[in-house]
Image (tube, rainbow, N blue to C red):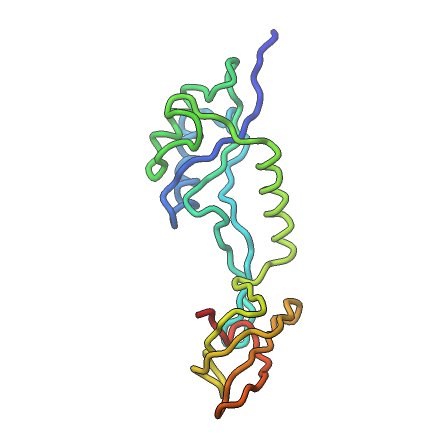
Length: 187
């Protein structure tokens, strides 16, 4: 039996903001049709990001590629998506199709690219990145505290403490103030 099946990754276009729900209904459809053996994994690439709200650090999930779902499946002998699986995917509400190739013959994603994404997701689970990244020179508006509604320029960033030094002009004089990430917004 020299069958040429192998696992391959594909990207699916899905309705943004509903990726998790669509993933669940795709999994249910696959189960209902007895196709579980073809589906290795389905991932909605998301990363943990943290933000500071009212002085509290919150970790939330943010989609890395809004509107996309990654699926690893077993291809048929011709290296293509098996017909039954193709129909199960295409008939799932919220999925508009595969990315790459043509509608009937989707092209798999580059294995190394997918591995990089998966490694990235794993790394971010351990260390959430700030929802907002700041760099010196960014123009910001202060949202709370004694300098509320003042505009300033980021002078330096301390990502480990989530602190910024912001240069603000007060009564015509430049003053440096230290603020938490969550107390400013980019403008």
